[in-house]
Length: 228
View 1 (cartoon, rainbow, N blue to C red):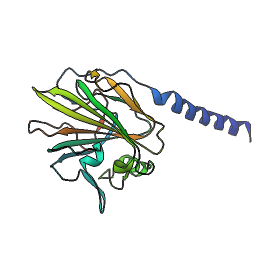
View 2: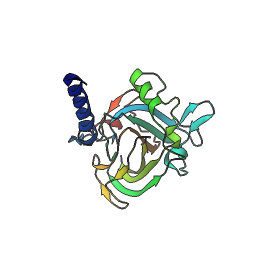
View 3: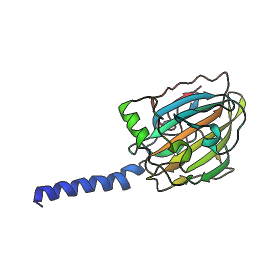
View 4: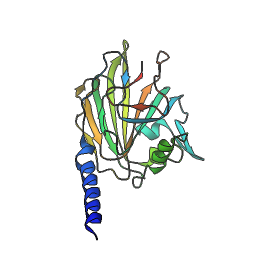
C-alpha cells in the first residue's frame, strides 16, 4: 500500500470514527417556539401523516401487510387518531424531545418480533423522493420500540400523546432519560435512539387540529410545529 493510499484509508477511518462516536451524539440547543402547537419529537423527514378512523389501517406497507395503531403503540386505543411518522437517517440528530408539556404516564419497551429489520427501503425512498415513503418498510410493525405516553393539556383540554421510538437493525439501544411520573416541558429531551431509526407521534384526533406538515417535509425536534 502506498503512502497516499494509507493516508486516504486512515482519513476515511478517522471520519467514520468521528461520525460514530462524536458527531452522532451531538445534541444542539433548540429554541422552542413561543407559539402554541404540538412539536416534532424527532429530527428527520415526515414519511406519513394519517388521520386514522377506529379500526382502520395507518398505512399499507405492501400487499397483505398493513400497520395499525395497535401495531405502533402495542395496545388498544379507542377513537380516531392522527399519526405522524418521521424517518431519522443516520445523519440526523437522534435525541428526541417532548411534543407537549405533560406528565409521563408510562415508558414501555417492546422487543422485535424476531430481530430488527434494516430500514434500507425507507432510507432509499426518502433519498430518491419515491412516494409512498413507507412502501416495503416492514420495520414499522416488526422492529423493537419504546412507547412513551405523555398526559398533557392542550388548547384547553386534556391530551394524551404517544411517542413511538422504533429501532433499526443497527440500533445499539433506545435510551430513556425520564421515568414514569416525571413532568416534562415541551421541547425537553426525553430520550434518544442510537443510529438510524423512526419516531411516530400518535394523538387522539380533534376536529380543531390544523396539521402543519406533509410527507416529504424535513422537521426538527423541539422546534418544528407539527400541528396547531
